[in-house]
Image 1 (tube, rainbow over the protein chains, first blue to last red):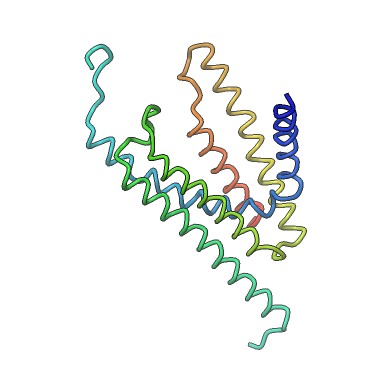
Image 2 (cartoon, helix red, strand yellow):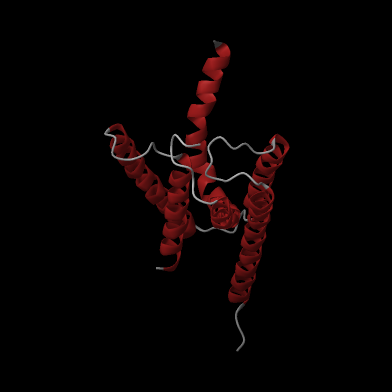
Length: 60
Length: 138
């Protein structure tokens, strides 16, 4: 029970801490990392094309 | 043309910021290229699982790079930039608060497929990045 209360308190406090104090400083590092990390999707078109059309439901 | 001390300092700080942003972008890019290029499972396949070790390394990568970027950029933000970041985050949050319930309600009405976290996250990121650029350069 105590663990649940502590977890709930931390999870409730985190957004306020992030929004009020850390958000402006973390915003751009996270955007840059996320922007670069988006490269993961570059491979999807190739993968989807090479996989071919999906089998219709019931035929797989 | 000779510039004043303040302008030179501002230009140097700007170059430093660009280098930090570039390093963070390159870090994300390398991680994205590595996972995207090495994992044969399609990204949009819900059942596909990544190697647990790779997942843990990526989480550590994200936390360390974000913390390092945060520390490197400390002290380089004025009040106008701080307000711009708050406004950009508020814009992205509002877009999320509209997009998710609409998708959820349409899903419940059987008009569309169940909401997926991936596209919602990408929407949030695009809104945050777009609003950040808008408030910075308008």
